[in-house]
Length: 356
Image (cartoon, rainbow, N blue to C red; front, side):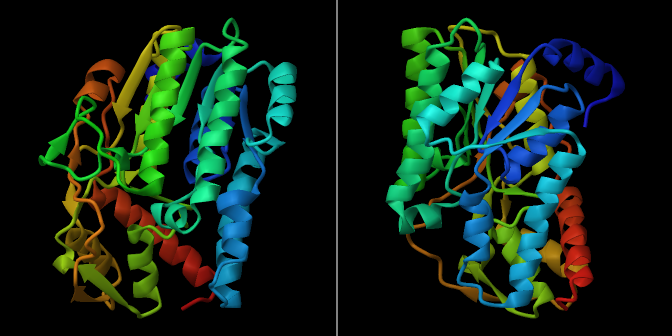
């Protein structure tokens, strides 16, 4: 991910930090932890290993035993990789203030990353109470614990979402574009952003807000469109292209996001500073292009055009100019490279589990 000189520089900067990823066993968190561990030894994942992971997948409506076992193996692979790379794991629920207080007292985090969230806008719409609970109660707990330990905690990072922008009124948005969130998921993310900034402005807590978009990559099983197209192809099911597949998304490979987050930890300016960054590939692509890449790699893939879902937001490109300038961020995984890598990984593990 980083060349030798950059890795050495980042290690020197982060070596005395104690970096805590709350809700860190999910797709973003475990990937981030694995890459951080290459730079510094003090990386901790705090997660109850249930929400968005075991419970959501093991007790889903998908009654096929083979698929059940397939998802479970991928989830267990995440945990195994964390253990093998000596990432310290703490079993705790971020909604429980007293448990978190014990962790802060015992381990004394210096950089706190909030990753606790419900995994999709669909799930948030189906269970808004759980969405509030996971995303906002956990956020309140962590912000308060950081406020009480301002001399020790030098940075609080909040993983937000590109959905806070709502319908794009232009082809490209930047961090100064006024957010117009739609739906439960996007609004809880935006509420979270406002709380984070308030703790910076009122209490001096150094904060960073990250807005990713349309993530994909190895060990992602969050039922995103990038995964659905691959599974449909492997199961010989027909994929639906809403509006003929003309919808735009700024697809981002997980390693590009992780690179950006790590850079935001390294280049953060400390207390009384609040920064917001779009961390994406920086170029929107349409859904039809995504499907075409699947078809190139799995020729039996089939699709049909379908009516556009009216309540889906209109999306586009997220400008990454600020991240490039401030963080020296440079994404290196276009769809033709990153998505092909994800397809090959997914197809390989699918075949190993005899699901073909």
